[in-house]
Image (cartoon, rainbow, N blue to C red; front, side, top):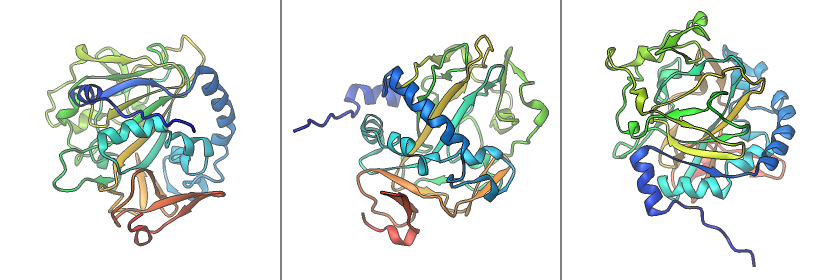
Length: 320
């Protein structure tokens, strides 16, 4: 009989996570396994015919929406977000009943700027409607979402690995009800503290509660990871990435999966995914139950079947 491995965080590791706002990296695939998966994955990412935000279905704007939530049509990614190495650790933080509500790819090509320092609580700042994308219960002690960032290629300082400021998840320095103004000319053309940093054509400084405040980069930690590893962090943690120096011609690719307790409401005020000036219908969207059971009726879920996912309306979910 095969023994089941429990990957839950130890009490000491959990205390470290709550102190720092992140933990890892952890091994998930060997370098050889990840390279094999990545080569098989690349043509599937180019083919967006089965993607739930197909470009010919997009309402407007951001062409990158077609590669959001690809775990809903790519088998490897569907399996990846439910791997016990990830889910056991996430559940030890969030509780036994969890869901995955979002996945995104984060490529960084030679010469690309670093991602600016930022935090995200309810994700309303990126939505044109200004509606929060996630809403925690009123009595919740937390906010934000757990992000599991997996390195599908090596992530180094030279090619743009993540940076964290430990312990910064406990205070939100940004007001997500404010508006960021898109400026195409700002892409790859803004220096902050001597480093090229941007945010997809937006300037996160426009959301600062205190316009004179700036992140203490002297405390920043670079998260170097080999391909096949992953790291876990709160979205409210101050995080950024280095620029891609261009000293190598290889891209850096990260895959981020976002997790919540099932008690949190996802897209409660919108029928469209709205991100950085783009929008696409949520008609085919559904959360994935990643551990435990769902005891609520406020979210829409999908069930994985032999031929893919079966989508459920909110009213069909109930107690599972």
